[in-house]
Amino acid sequence: MTDSDGQPAEGVVVDAAYCEVELARLYDAECPWHPQDDFYLALDRQAGSVLDVGCGTGTRLGAARARGHRGDLVGVDPGAGMLAVAREKAPDVEWLSGAAQTLDVGRRFDLVTMTGHAFQVLLDDDAVACALRRFRDHLEPGGLLAFETRNPARRAWEGWTEQRTRAEYAGPGGEPFESWVHDARPHDGDLVTFYATTRWPATGRERTEASTLRFIDPGRLRDHLRDSGFRVEGWFGDWDRRPVGDDSPEVVVLARPA
Image (cartoon, rainbow, N blue to C red; front, side, top):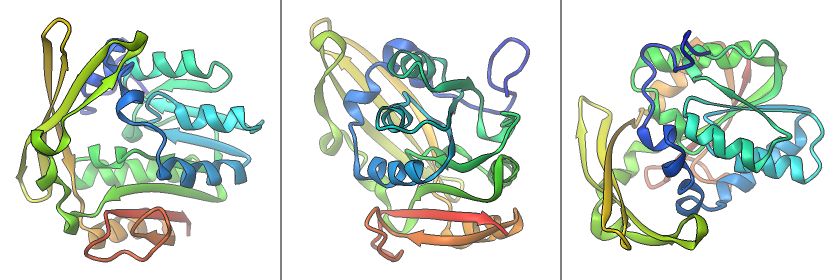
């Protein structure tokens, strides 16, 4: 899943915020438990084994273990900082370095997930197709793939401004920090590049990192799933399983190998 020096394979881009432990430790404050976590945790508890790709700091798999899941739980992420936090949080879950396009855990699972909009870091059709093939290869016969991507019709990036997103949080040890997203710029069809700034008021220190996400057309996504050998079982516009519409914030996908 990684190259010879332990870094993600060529072509896999990893944001600095996910690689550095200092920034990874801020992630849980900015991204607390959410209805999406309840949605996926319910799937975890129904599955005998779970592979979470792009697991981040491991909150959900840690919660599954804490609530009695005794099966095989594996989290994979290309960000070394995220994995360090996950290992501290839940040492009884297996955490591996890797990325969706190069996934090779060596065994199959009842459930494969990719959450937290991590699917949107697959920036072109080749990356999507490659990841879906790797997911299929890691599923038991009849297993379930579950992931979500933001609905492009909702144009969420238009709200990614400093005025709308700036907030203050308590970081590790109670040290306050501020963060905000700004200067979102659509380009090249369905890509959006934006900037995320973190500032520590006590010292005035500030960091800004650029990221790019893909807002894939739902019709194209369905084609990819079909071409990769999946049968769509669920297609939801939000975590309450409502249908996808133009005003839906999400496209939540449940699919099984055909």
